[in-house]
Image 1 (tube, rainbow, N blue to C red):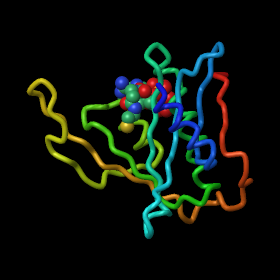
Image 2: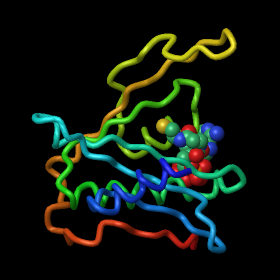
Image 3: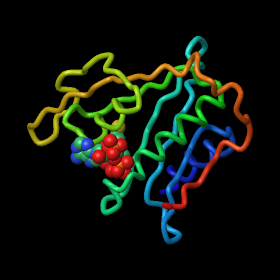
Image 4: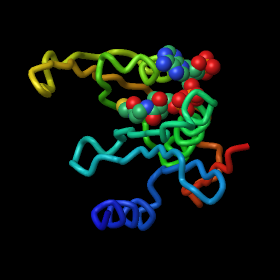
Length: 146
Ligand SMILES: CC(C)(COP(=O)(O)OP(=O)(O)OC[C@H]1O[C@@H](n2cnc3c(N)ncnc32)[C@H](O)[C@@H]1OP(=O)(O)O)[C@@H](O)C(=O)NCCC(=O)NCCS
């Protein structure tokens, strides 16, 4: 818990793109795009997201993704990368629907209780988009579930 708080504070301090979904004062979903810090890679952000069970399939993930990608454009991020388990049909569908393409696959990347899972590497280019004309401050946004 403490580690998550430190991570969250780091995102806020750096104004990195992050969106959360709140319903009845409860955080039910989140999406963030963390820029890389290595020289030569700072134009790239890594995307992570999740929606709590019981709130999935209601359009929350789609809205979180769309809003967070907008923030990433405003922040000047040119390329968004992610890793997703290849059996995660819901997430892959969502990412493909929003323009992410498959760039690679790690075979047998995870082994849990003798069962292997592959990981897909996906990416989306944001360069050439009209995000540069948008507002460039106040990165953190909250989605109220409506
Ligand atoms: C992936 C995840 C974030 C999607 O969030 P969500 O709120 O359920 O997604 P939405 O309700 O916005 O649905 C997005 C799209 O996926 C489709 N979808 C939902 N569940 C699906 C499924 N099981 N299989 C295929 N498509 C599915 C929806 O129909 C919708 O399509 P549309 O935009 O054409 O209408 C959510 O399932 C989740 O948190 N999963 C566990 C954590 C995870 O996998 N995180 C990503 C790791 S990389």
